Length: 185
Image (cartoon, rainbow, N blue to C red):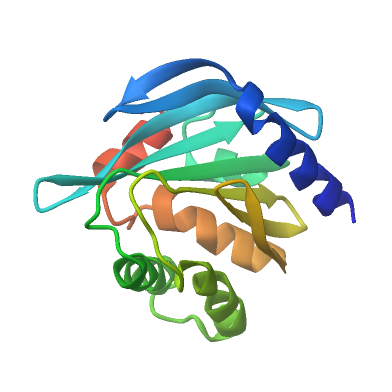
């Protein structure tokens, strides 16, 4: 129930984000509030493939950190993906996220397989340029997924939360330059 309140506050405050940094023609806010807790932009960068920008990924935390371990220790972490290309179709996003889960678990996803299936359903519908996916993760609680301000679902559990964060911030992330940018390295 607290997670619902937390996300409700996030959705309500998204339009109030202050100051922005321009990355690949996307305004990336320098800070946001989630459940009356201020979060700062830790870092942001571009996911590209075949010389095309696919999305801008950004990481928000209570305090600036530089390692995955420090992100995992935070009480809350928010990852936002803003789609910048029509190349990011529903099928490609689903496939990419699924591959990310496999990589982040060394191809051993059985312990979160149902959660992955549930999570990737948010990519079952059209994904278009300008769409924004927000993943609010709370230590010890789980993940809330939001697409364009609309809650898509909740997944409880610390194991899923950690693996999701590793997709973008782990040593074997799909794009090291995006990882480094999000971790402000």
